[in-house]
Image (cartoon, rainbow, N blue to C red; front, side, top):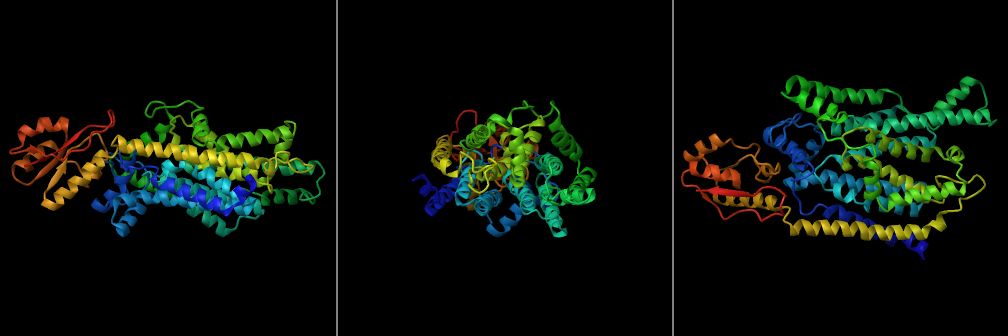
Length: 519
């Protein structure tokens, strides 16, 4: 019964439908008050309003620290949709959907339909993917580009193909895109895995030669060395990596030369500060592991359990297991674990930063559950824990993931509406509607909530002295301010009154209250 359930095409459509639904609703009600969403949203807003296409600021007028590519995409989408909310969130949503489809198709073609279903379920039905799918951040687009790079390497290894000029050009393009999304962090997710894989590959080939293998070890020493370089290589050569980095460094150098504060904010604080323990809050070395086990459950548990049972079937001969592993699957291990270890060594940590290891883990899980390419197989035949024996556990994991992830996402959405998490966003929308209907000229005072400026669609906050002057000379019709600042400003504003328009009361600790001051 479990086999027919997993092989039924309707199951695939149900899982895909639930996945995409969770992607769409996972962050409702939409707001910009957490996870630095306002900083990312403000880049494209400033591009359109101010024409700052290469270097932007945050809502509080500090230098924006990320390269502008995702901002360019959002600005282009705004030109098409004329909706800021859609243009801010669509890049992440499209990247999430593309990742889901790509994982499913790749796993199906390589390992079978059940493996494809597992890869799709693992990617969509966890606590990280639905959260990031419409978050106004760069994590999901970055994960897509890193996965495309890793997948290109995987296909070279699986097909035992040489790196050709067009492959290197494709790799260069993808690396440049990743650099313009979030800088050289792509190196941390890929280079450690490439290094370990190349070490293993050379050791594996030389080990096979020393044990009397006929092919590909026949011929002279130079021929064997050339074969080792050619077959199953993960390394493309230096130029795609160096030239893409040069493009990023050109952006950095221009920022240092022409943007005041760029060196301190981007180079010293954002980049070098990540490796220290004074600027950003450091976390322990093991920080990502328990979070990954929890956020990626039940698939993380399934990954570990299958590996343990496969090793037990080989009588815990770990060395023999790694010698028998296929190169393609070993690359998936190197890729995912290399990124996890490299990111764990950086003192500054946050759970969403480890997200790019999720897609290769999904593909690795698909390989584990497959009858075609189990990660650890006995040399004398199929593993005792073969695909048929695992199907009940796969079905149970899939059902559990649907209820676990769906229940968690539903509870977050319900609590968000109950606690009026989007109160300031609604307040800003009502202000814009009221001001447009009455043709009011209005401004906003600086506030703790970074999203306020975007909610009222203003590129800058107004200074208190200027606000008083503009108000008293009749050049301003309304002001948005926190209740604390309004109490000090009201006596200085002639004929000022507090409008009945105000945000719904939010849960305590979610931010300050605001008022709309009118004549």
